[in-house]
Amino acid sequence: GHRYPVLLPDGKHFICTAIPPRDGKYTILFGSMDGKELTPIINNAGSGALYVAPGYLVYQRDGVVVAHRFDAKKGRVIGEPVSLGDRPLGTGFSGAAGLSVARDGTLAFTTNTPFATHLVWADMNGKQIADVPMASGKYVGVEVSPDGRQAVLESSPRIGISELWMADVERGVATRLSYDPGENT
Image 1 (cartoon, rainbow, N blue to C red):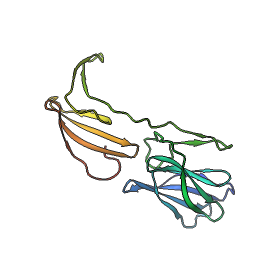
Image 2 (cartoon, rainbow, N blue to C red):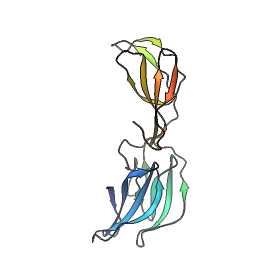
Image 3 (cartoon, rainbow, N blue to C red):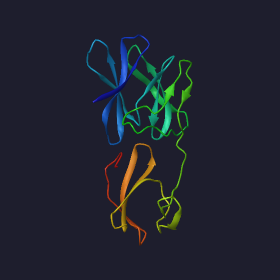
Image 4 (cartoon, helix red, strand yellow):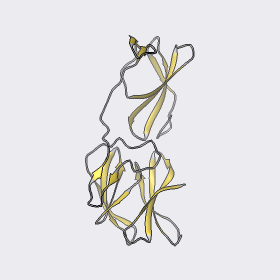
């Protein structure tokens, strides 16, 4: 599929994101409103891209925001992207840019602050009852088995990458379930 089109300044061309990602990477495509073939211009983006005047594509790559020189008339990137150093939180929508840009070039996005969580048992009012004897991790999701003895944990080092683990919550031992690159939810 092709998602998240961004119209370029000439009003006749656009960029968009091809989904699903391959090995956790998105392809950014260049196309024209006359419906001619879409041309791949970036094959290793961590998100969709936005156009920023006077000639940049801004997107995520390897977990950081980058700016890449872009010739909007020829539909090609120039040189290598430059890291802007920020780690964006991104979005839950596969292939979306996860950031916004104003006409004056101001970028807006939420940063992805490193975190570690630990698991606890809580009552229905949210009051902590006990710690679960598991090592802290970057857990972003948990599904507990009906008997409460096991759980599937989703661990995520950054947006677009996640792993599933089967945890014995009584013993505090986890076994990896997923090995595919990208998001495993």
